[in-house]
Image (tube, rainbow, N blue to C red; front, side, top):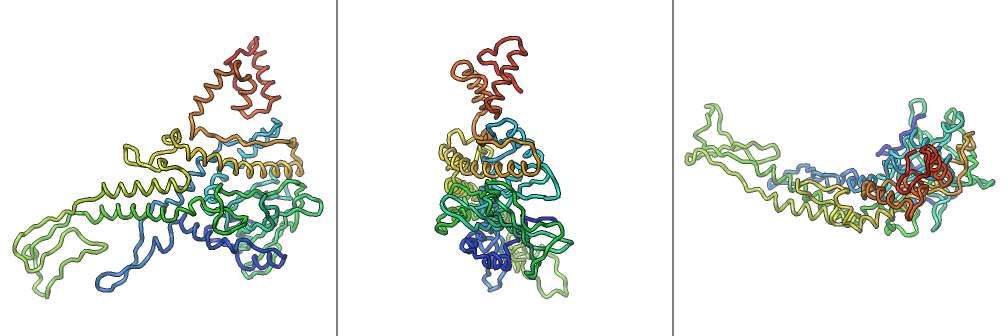
Length: 475
């Protein structure tokens, strides 16, 4: 079976919804679906704002496409790159658990895919990680983490503390035919989480693909899924388990950015030089009853014929460009977009070369951005810790010899938003003054206390002396 979980045209079909209703669940997706579809259109720059019809003075209609820099997608990608990358680490209080998680995430490319999931979650308001098990395998190969966005996530039981039961729906292919795969993650009578799988064909009939187990007990007391949401209050639907798009309150700003960009490009296109030539400069075919002048249009030329004219054989017309004023409008639109989406006024701005500045150039003086980064990181950390706990529990069930940690924390790579090297150098100077060498290793290498102490001692013995202040070896 292959899964096409990120097919942008896929929405949960009615027969799957009817099945869930038949189990007694109320589906919160139906209250939020209109908003999610709208946000999805803005991310793809489609809809009536971008493609519409207009008419000319003769009443003829024609299709118009507005140019776009896809500002909604740009906003989401910026948040994804600021919050997650391959250097983000899950740190346990037991070093073997930390090392196991690091290897697993590296082998499966989890953080890169998680960044894509985060981009979609910030755009559509909700995303999720969920455990997927292959009962035919053992060890870490039996456990995988699947990624979902709001179109495929259906919370079933929730309260103000979070979601406790959740369903995930994706399009899969079995023997060349598309089927809808529903997986329900919910606690069983034993108090552990089980994964129930139900499949449907295109007609809504239940099918049982070969090798698919209807229900699997994961033996995990921790939730086997984690909901991802931006740290933005959902003001669209009250008490909804879904989140709100990070640009939900900035739709007019998105429109203004593309309106200014389209006008800027159109200004250059319409300001091309036109040359008007007198009628006497054109050869006329005796059989031709008359040639009408070439009109201005979508595919207009730059040379035009003046009918019945003999004066000014050649006349040039070059409209003055207004790009400077329009660029200023474009700049203001970008600034408002950045402010409304949590980046601050100076994040999306022009530098001296005329292009948008990067995060590294603006974060040092952007307190609004730093505050919002911390808010998003705190909420995202809960999701990463939740799925990591479930991952370890399920791996232990399948024979992996990894200790169960009591505490998990997230070490974010903040080098893009602050001078990490300077901070490390400053901490190095504090070693032996206000910081112990093993504390330095715990902070910068993600080691637990026992491992950090042992490695510091080993480095000191190797050198034949006690580790001096300001001297911390690398592992």
